Image 1 (cartoon, rainbow, N blue to C red):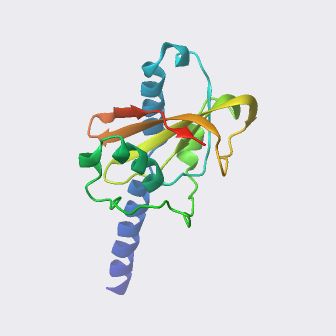
Image 2: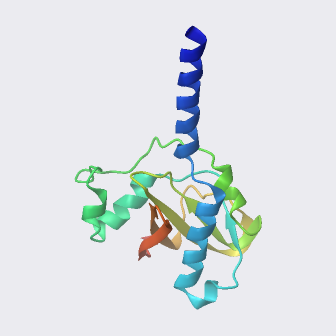
Length: 162
């Protein structure tokens, strides 16, 4: 009897781990939609970082841009940033990229309420895909919703980081 209970608990936690991380196919579909946003990206290769970036930091920019209804579970009225954010490793996102070094670097947030954000950083020279601590320049963030049919690009935003 105890073995059955332990087995059921293990299966439950294993299923939670599987759903907590998106598959490479979902990320590949999202990157394909990013490529479709601009003709210049159609043949561009993207490098992908394996460490996540903060969902709340990225969502805050969309919230300021007027996407208030999409983030009803987030409290942004007195938000100063996630200074103690601990990134997690997503190997499935790393596998979705084209190559290790590229002019364009993609980074993803964790999925919250079936939403995740992919940020595109442009580099003047080729470097490995490591998220900079302080990025100086313009980035492009894509708000993506995970649906039953796949993924859907909801909104695109270009914040200026200085």
